[in-house]
Length: 211
Image 1 (cartoon, rainbow, N blue to C red):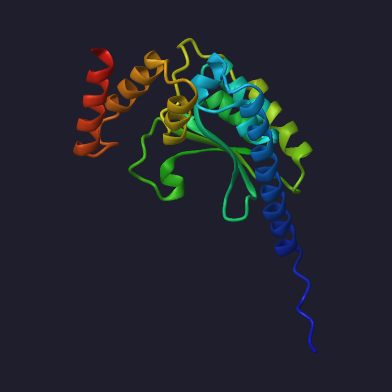
Image 2: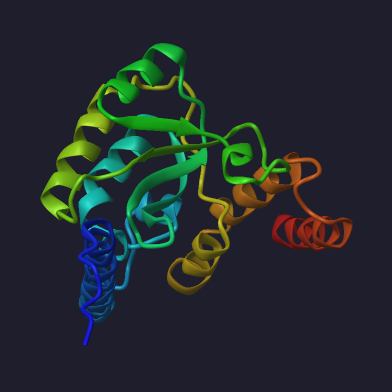
């Protein structure tokens, strides 16, 4: 019986698949424990649209640092078919000087068109890197290095407008209609990003919250 040839790259990718699964199970358990013990989100968690425990551990500290510095994030953590890419992305811009510093660390600054999403807003940015090994320690170190070199932005951070963030706020902070209104206003300001039907629905929701 012939043995399959040794494929180091496939084995490496399988390690990322296994690690992503392990992390997902861990965050699920952490989130369940958090909801049982303290289901009340902090102001930061309300803006981000997730409990801290819901965020992958390797990117958790960096994501909050992004927010502290004024970067409106939407998604984070494992990316790519095998989970072999790390990403923090959202509606923010990275200046050229900072871009060069991130690239010097092995990271990349990408836009939707780089992923075959040409219609995505040019304001939407992906900060990514490819870890050499499936090591949370390595990933966390890299994310912290990237977060540390980000300059602070003058503008105030805005609430996440992702569907997941909206669902989170409706469940755990329904009284924060100010955040809901701000999120809807941000969405409506993004022309050509939503269908006319969805825009009408958002306008009606915003009107209802304002009454």
